[in-house]
Amino acid sequence: MKNKIFILALASLLGTVSCNDYLDVNQNPDRIAVTDLTPEFIFPGAVTNTYYVQARRLAQFSGLEMNSIAGNSYSYGTPFVDEYSPNITTAFYADVWDQTYRNMSNFQLIINFNDANGKYAATKAISKVMKAYYMQNITDLWGDAPYSEAFNSAILTPKYDKGEDIYKASIADLENAVQTLTTTSNTLANYDVVFNGDKAKWIAFANTLKLRYLMRMSNVTGELATYRDQKLATLATATFIASDVNVNPGYSSSADTKQNPFFNYNVYTSSGSRPQNYTLVIPSEHIAIALNGNNVSDTRDVYQKFNGIVDGRRGRMFTLVTPLTSSPASAPKAVEGVRQGATPGQPGAASGRNTSRLGEGLTIGSQTITATDAAGIKAETIQKGSAKPGVLMTKAEAEFLLAEAAVRYPGAFSNAQGHFDTAVTASYAYLGATGAATYLTQIAAVGKLGITVGTTSNKIEAIMTQKWIALTGINPEQSYFDYTRTGFPVTPLPTIAIKTVKPNRLVYPNSEYQSNVINVPKMTGEDVFTKNQFTPFWAR
Image 1 (spheres, rainbow, N blue to C red):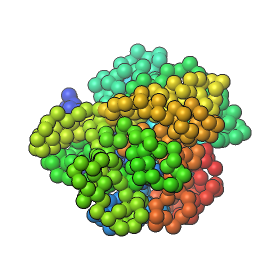
Image 2 (image 1 turned 180 degrees about the vertical axis):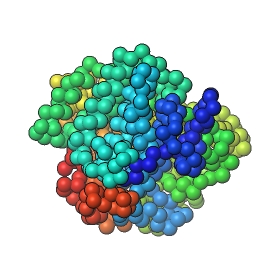
Image 3 (image 1 turned 30 degrees about the vertical axis):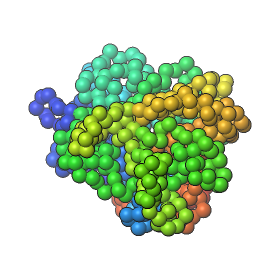
Image 4 (image 1 turned 45 degrees about the vertical axis):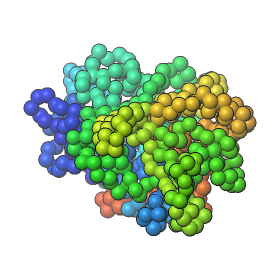
């Protein structure tokens, strides 16, 4: 664990700071030590750069694991072999660990800032919220991790804390943040790139994150279950987010470094060129069948609940195309993807197939393109997609959390159906799709897809299935953690998978085995596929 702390997004020290100054993620981190800055200069860059990692690499890994995206084998042979196998080594998505920790150090620097007059009490509180937000990703991806000593620059080889202790400490931070934000007279100025200084929204976000932590613990037993239930009771009358939680430090199309990082990585650069991911990453056959209502009459059991129910979000999530290049122009259009691991001519990868790309709902949100000519459409897409806010948590996810809580813990939470319907409706709204009410009517009596009928297990599967659809291309890592915890939604393995199950976690990165070898747990790639002492505590 390297504890030299620098802010990656540098701001001017000479007075007024433009939002765009927070976006220069590729600048030399050794230009200025973050210890020379005060919290208002540190916070926006810390949020922006940590989200940068989440929106790109973590989203790609999670989307592949959840079989919502696939590599375009029509153009790239057999892409994503390591992800499909999966071949999980110390180098596998190691950048997610390294860069997330580096940026979380900046939140801790704010928390530790010498503030005798309490000027930054509110900023310290929201930094605790953001630290808890990202520390959960670390713990859920890797299990035990450096925490209590991780952000102390005097300790070069921090100890590893148990995942359950990290969870408890993070929940305590969230509670402390709520208390501070409730009582402090501090205001949050224009450097709050999440809620623009709205403390009530920060409190609701902290409560929602606390609920996410506790729902992740749904399978724990003994003392941890007692702790979970006690903490759930404290949320019975809490406020939760009522809208999407976004980050926007001033995204624009003025330069690559200023663009929304998801858009720049997957759709267009600021100059109008296509990044490699535009042609590399396409929808999987799995999500195409689900969204299209199993229009290909696939007989596998996993697809039967989708029969005949065309999802109104599909054309906003992915482009609709004719099935084959030889299809007449009048042929029905649908989402067309490829089976993970299949190459052209194999099952799931028909020869001559057209393939869909990311749709407007995932690239520009609820906005629409008004231009009608090709050049105008491109220019407007770049402008709107580049400036689109990043998403830390959607309203849909929050409502699905509340729906699950009501199913599992009816003594503390209620109205599972109402929260479920609100979640689906919020997903439609985020994507700019129409027909949510019709879709909810269609799925109402369909077990494992709607929440009205079936056993508790059926209802949990319905929640996780709908959550998977709603978070695809937005926050897919949360569906991956849910899958590890619940086994839902049922997710087929790639055709070239050499394992019979998906990984429960990742292997610690090279950086830890090189610089913190005395503390990093000794494990192998095989350990991630079994339930053992290395598995995140909530999934053992």
